[in-house]
Length: 110
Length: 241
Ligand code: FES
Image 1 (spheres, rainbow over the protein chains, first blue to last red):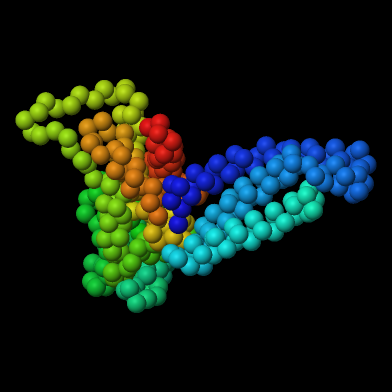
Image 2 (image 1 turned 120 degrees about the vertical axis):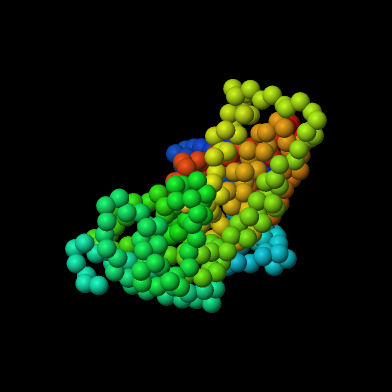
């Protein structure tokens, strides 16, 4: 179910996510304590490449990480194997990527 | 036989690959009696058709493992008094292996995985060469030493929930064996072993639950060996091992 490649991919994406999660939490606390309104937040994120990159990276890492994790759970719990398991994992990864990147784009670019 | 205070109420699983059920036997309780003694007594005194497996009776051969009150144990070294629940004890075949008959499981899948994990020695010398000297304090020898006393009883394999969820998974014993060879300077195929344990069903599927280390009758720690394999395969992936 997990080969060395998938194992490493999951560990590496975890490493990428860790600082981004900390950054996100710090940002949330800062934004709320500072009493920023939705409009004020959007004014800062719209058109900002750094924020697009920050959350875009997070979405990519999450999509890969979660899809591999789900692959193991589905494989062990539902006994799915082979091509079916590959397709399901990839589909879930694609779903997270599309949903996540769409959200990132809408607060940063659109 | 009367069911008195000196009698054990023993539930033994009877059946084959197609299924079965527990059958109850009354067995006289004796001092220092082992679970294997109980099984032998039933087979010799009550039902000669009871199938089970053992050889050495002293914890060396690893053939007598069974599930006792739901936990895998070496029955020749398991005292009845230590596992009794009231007067009751339940004995079943090992989990995660096909049953041949009653308490005897088919060990083929277990040993096939040793081969799949390249858990076989790959010699580099012939009988005409000097015997390679390995220092007992060499770090790799120390790692191998900690894992080498496996008696192939399959208790770790039966205890492993990852094997249960993923029948392709090589399991703790085969991977533990592979780890001893990865650390054996006399073995000539270190990279083949690392390759073999990196496939589907390889060491990376371990969830680090640690049942293997908890139940190993020889107090080995296959989970530590597997962590070592994860480390070494990762290193070699990044070209550092
Ligand atoms: S009979 Fe040999 S280990 Fe129990």
